[in-house]
Image 1 (tube, helix red, strand yellow):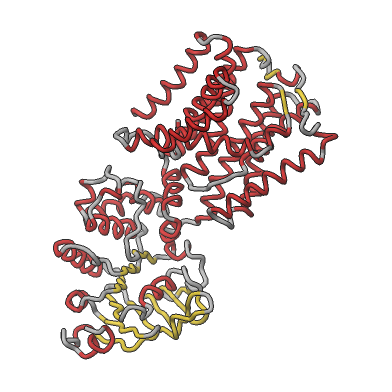
Image 2 (cartoon, rainbow over the protein chains, first blue to last red; image 1 turned 60 degrees about the horizontal axis):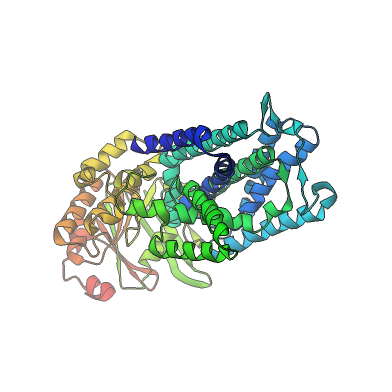
Length: 309
Length: 231
């Protein structure tokens, strides 16, 4: 009950910020919420199931490009968004069926290779994808029914709605017995197998769910912010959700949101102070990792807040 | 009844088990004894499908189970508690049991049965498994295996490293499970414990069955213990 109240409280706070936050922070929070959905999904694979992927940019880009290209082809935003979500899940399912035959460092390398192949494919088909330069969605493609997503408030509320659905679904997942089986696989694969679980299948389902989240974030990014480009398929976008998760707390529901929030504001604040802001961000992250190796929420959970899911 | 006929298995090219044949009947305890390296734990893994057989057959109540994927063997009614317990350390007692029960669709009667067997676990349902004592962890490991509702229970040295009161509890539990009709296969090195629990003793040496003897015919100083276990 405490956990549900906490998560509903966070969502209520974000709703309140729609009315209270200054324009600059309002726009930033919308971006943070969409990328937090990406992080929430990453955490299903990494934090809860123990799958260390370096290829999630592929799933994000699958959602981004599926939605963007279909929008360009004249699809309306609703079906294009749905196609984007499914594209992320489908690519995760297919690549996972191969990549999950490996584990540990090999899994990192294989997922990275898949993501790099995706990135190169986007560049190869530049006439269609417009490569690094990317393309903008038309304003008509950013109308969700009567809602105009080019406007600040509808965009913020759409990002919040997506984040709320993603957060509450994840909370339900990790508190279900299925969620416990994922943690069991993370803790000890052989024991899970000896309790009758098809470990490969559990991992594949987790990775596919993770891909659906990444696809949803990518699809939402295309429609909410109106830009699709190859940069989103690069390695940086595979590392970001990992960083969000590690900072906020792997294996905690809210951790990736907190991690995304922290990263955005760290970069924002330090870039105001100095041109070497990435050095300052790196140093801050190092300090955090040394003093809170389980991430912020993971450390809080270890120090008494055991009810944190 | 669990029956093994001429099974051979090993690690890669190294064959460890050579033509093992034995049977474990319902309502009986079969103890496996032998020196270190005799192949006892390898035998458990081979039964569970964790090692592929290169020859031989394993049947449970007449149904062949060799060649099944490892996760399918428990679903056919064989549960395994390995050495070292291997719990899901970050999960609570209730969650550890829940993970075991989920395969059976969350059978409430099974959960009740396990908690009746180990009342201590009921007092610790919300406690993380890693914070339990060694004896409690072993109770949880056995309890979680019983959540599968098995017909055969494989236990690999369950009393190892436990204090005397816990060893007694484990013994009483094994005897109760036997009375309930379970076939228990127990790797055990302590002669006294074997004589208290076993119906038959399988002595292994160098990956082979050296001798199978009814337990009631064995004295604590029987030559088999000296010859095959080194006691």
